[in-house]
Image: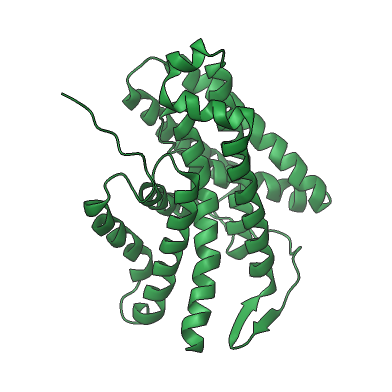
Length: 293
């Protein structure tokens, strides 16, 4: 029983990280209907920017976080304005391919500047573990989990209760309707990308802190695509629920089968996704759309 509780606790932490990585993908999609494949590159770039300020420049970690957030927000704004704005009105495939090109660009740029050797972020969280009954949880994981819960709560509040969040929802439905209501659609696009880039840096920090900053970091974003599809492309709450489901699937499959089949934990969420999508093709909380031909 203690092993099950321990695995469940690990799955919760992993699932919340997946949810944090996945939510920016949902925000960009809600605003522009573009599936942002560049998100993994933004995670890697933002994580390395934080590493540069904190480790290479030796700045206090608080200032490093602030400067990394500013730098990533500016990078997201520039990419949206320079690369994606000129493609508005073009076939959606052009926009998707542009995000894939941005992924390759950010990935290559990060490796060209910081190399392929994994880098460790400075240890800023307390070490040790907290024992709750028979469950042993690392203090860094507890703090990371609490931070992620706060971030997810703020994002949920922003989307559902603020003027710009509601404008983003209207824009996602119909651009012309949004413009007729006085919403600056291009500004909403830019805002979604800026928020997405900032959250990508947060995701890069949390994943890089638990593991390391390396060229394989975008793979976490790739797994989060499955979380987005399972939760529903338009649903922030759905992504959180799907992240917890996927995190626990990976944790439990690794626990029971990891010693027998290498890498089965990474594959298992995709298998679960395929099965669930047969019955819920729009995801658990996605909007069901009926189109007439």
